[in-house]
Length: 442
Image (cartoon, rainbow, N blue to C red):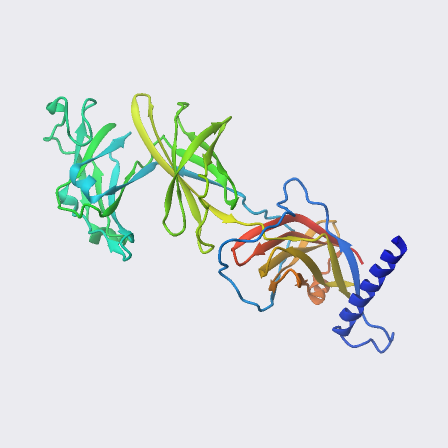
């Protein structure tokens, strides 16, 4: 049985070689032989830092790229090779916070927290499609906005236990800008802004709009404290499996070792928002995804998790919001380790890959080819990219090289394929990445 299997493999390779020769340049009249030949090779074993997963599944969302055309690009490269691994995590910092409110809440008064003087307060109208049509809230004239200090025994809505808690005589606003002024500065969302004065020291405040507003209209109130020592930072994955049950988050508030319980919200590409429960596990937080809630509603955009923290630092109230954007994906394909390389006059011409594909879709491969100079250094020659429509029955994709470009580089073996990346272009998602994938031997 083993002998028969080996014979079958030899016959299959011979057939592939013949096919490659059929597409090759004409037979060399001097040697009466084709200068092209094929050789089977095996990808290197993935390292611990590579992104490789052989377990595949079918995507549940509609693809955004359904082109069935094969495309291939080769970009010449020069100089000593510098690896550029993909960023699998992202860091975000924030010296601000924002809250979503309605027109009714703004008319009644909403609470604000400020940890320093001269904070900037912005109010931006937002759109609403809950009625089936887009309803955009009206802009707010900044002169119709009042911001007053609130005493510790008074609620933001102004229901004071001691009515002397608000000093209405002191000026807390240094300057203001309306929607037209902000639009001329590039902010075109009908916002209004107020710059607080040096008298607006750390504490609790109440923001109230005297302009009559549609009660159900949506607004975003943003408080930014530029230069604040209190920065909320988050580190999280930039790509998350669609079936993940939680999102791992590393949170830290600078200049503070206070314990806090953050609040988190999942916001999808279509604007749908879902509150998330936060659970502390060791030094990290886990944002728990509710049962039945998808991490994304479309392949066309990104999702984000929004985290808000409220705490006290050295007696000062501090509120911060930070966002982490991620791409939700399904691991819909993987690269099989056995590849067929095609050589032209002793130089690599192309690499034929076979994929495991869960279902039909458009997939792309890319990689960087390097050679070795006289000093033994790895030098970049070219970057190759290819994409095609693949099916479970026809899952092969070829990555083209350029023997003339390789020869002109003057570099010698070993030639290597580095930064091998597989993408699902229907999801616009990276599925795998291998830093050193293949040593090309003749």
